[in-house]
Amino acid sequence: MTIRAIVADDSRVMRQIVIRTLRQAGYDWEVREASDGAEALEAVRADEPDVVLSDWNMPNMTGIDLLRALRSAGFGTPFGFVTSEGSPEMRATAEAAGALFLIAKPFTPESFREVIEPVLA
Amino acid sequence: MTTTVAHDQVHAIAQEVFAAMVDGDLGLLLPWEGELPALDDALVAWVDLFGDWSGRAVLVTAEGTAQELTRALMGLHPDEPVERADLEDAFGEIANVVGGNLKALLPNPGTLGLPRIGSDLPPLEGAVRALHLPLSWRGRLFVVDVWVTTAAGSTTEGAS
Image 1 (cartoon, rainbow over the protein chains, first blue to last red):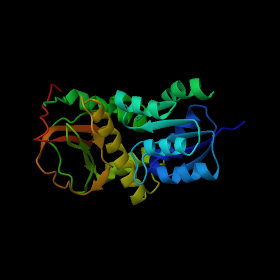
Image 2 (tube, rainbow over the protein chains, first blue to last red):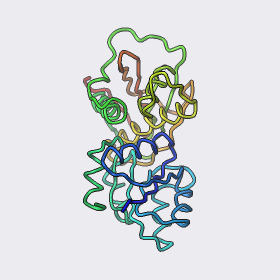
Image 3 (tube, rainbow over the protein chains, first blue to last red):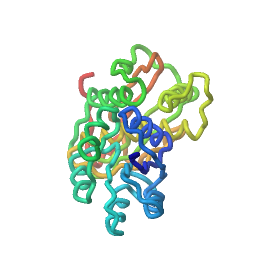
């Protein structure tokens, strides 16, 4: 079964890099793109995916606000961050809000596999 | 508070960003040797950091170099044209990743602003340039600067 994902990032270039890296990591997922948290929230409401990969720092709605909004609305969609900020504090905040993982930028296909494999494969 | 961010740490961040996102090789971003050339068509990307340690991470390079970086990031062919929006997006995202990793070095990280792009760096009130790191990417000048607001602390330059 093909995994259906939403990749949320305000950078179009970074969304492309995330999608390319997923393929390089061996994940032939069906991906929809969202340019901020609000757009991702609407996309989940319209058609819930199997997983959301989200940037943290975005205009309109941040990634952590997106995750909290999803959980408040009753969506338990598996959720991971792909963010330039990987401090212990942010990892703890992400985990407390229900994120499965946090991938810090810059990343490689190997770093994708290391965190995604245990939780999704 | 006083926070030290050394040349070596920032160089290591930049190398890691380029290795993962651009080159696939750690050895292509080296210290710049010799006189710094004037950049007639400079492009500047920056992100501001707010908190106990406030300041700005800044990247400066020639527009042509930023175009090459954009091609590398997007997997474009060398002769493919680069849209202005993609150029700004890609160069800003490199600044964002450098800024995010710089923030991770700080003991009490605050928040990170969104990346900005311009031909000049707008002033940041009360800030001084605390670190100036001219690098060579494939022989092209690529500068990483760190500015810090004097009220928040100081940044000193370590051995390079």
